[in-house]
Image 1: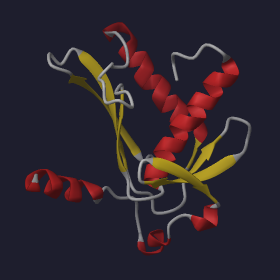
Image 2: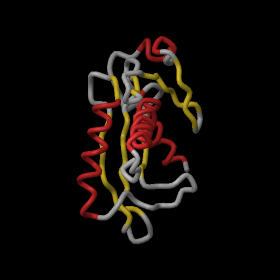
Image 3: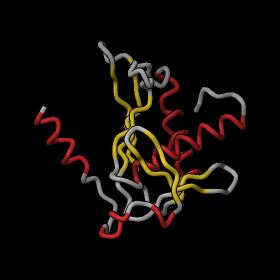
Length: 152
């Protein structure tokens, strides 16, 4: 999103980023790694002098484009690649106990949910029924991830 120069395209990229975060929060939570292509090539998020600005930019985008009253993400920079020379942004996303909206930058909000590797936009009232029993935001998916890693 920080590579896009055209302002309307940049707004779309910010909105898409917020939708990705909201879609995880509206289902089971999860981890998003920025700096890895769809073909799973590690490209990183920029040079060392750009990293702090990009981290702040990502936080600002989430504050502006997400409709939720609590913090649901943790952002960390990590070195990846053979020599750990590519810095990527790892975003840990909590499962939200109520619907999280993603704005389009023009005052409209969608309520995306993860469906396998894609996103489906639903009405606020159609976010997963599993949220009905949640009393607080959580990162329960981490226990499942830990077990998955142990089993494999």
